[in-house]
Image 1 (cartoon, helix red, strand yellow):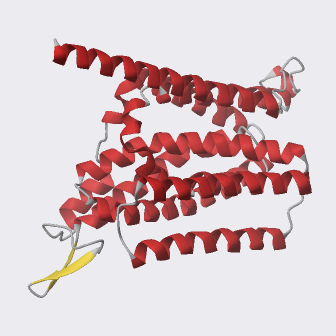
Image 2: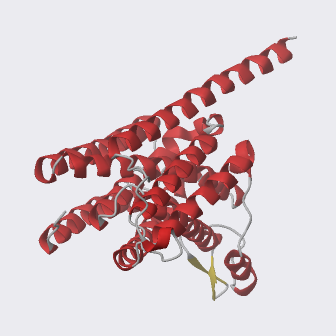
Length: 332
């Protein structure tokens, strides 16, 4: 794709405007959104992503649209998995439901900024060193194995990192929340509220998640414009999805297994592409490996869709069976 500076600028302005509207709504009336409100917003953002893909199809062809849809779906599924940790963070720090929207939106903005930096760095590395695909692929396979080993316990674990522990010790923190404010004044002394610690926890968690998601999207497409827009559309609406799914997250017990398969598949795809374009002197004498197959984008989309569908259906079926067993035990 040959994306001009004007197209980049127009895209950034449009997406920033949407985020600002979202921010103004929260700033004007902090609240816990209803199921209906959350459904409408999630539907709006998903529809926006689908329309954007149609626009790409009309202007840049089916290949670009297919890469965008596949990348968006991958990033969106990874973002849903991130919600597990967000739920734990909110519960761990006892964030009032009315102010969780602001925490999530700030976290999303931080994620966009950090992922923008990772995308720029990744694109620069790939343009200069194609062998970086070996590293990306191996990292995704390693992440997939760890995710599969964690299994159903993945959503129950959250360990405070060094920055959170340091912030607790070094910063003057008030005893309770003061709305959604980050600072307050107590007896003439300026203190930070626990909301700042929550923001740090969300921000650092976003940074860790970006280490997985950025190599994954580069396994789908190496076009920076598509990588960036797929990430933005995946993160937009994540706040409302958090409230919409609610208790359903606890029922998606096989989602981590499904994502492990997706990440492993993309990792293998990256290594195959690295072999096909090989220039490393100690691999096949520095020549491309002719037998390495190319996995087309339509096949990638089918594998990702099929895997996520199977994981979701299997999760819901098992959750239903477990609930029925519990009811039988209680009634018996």
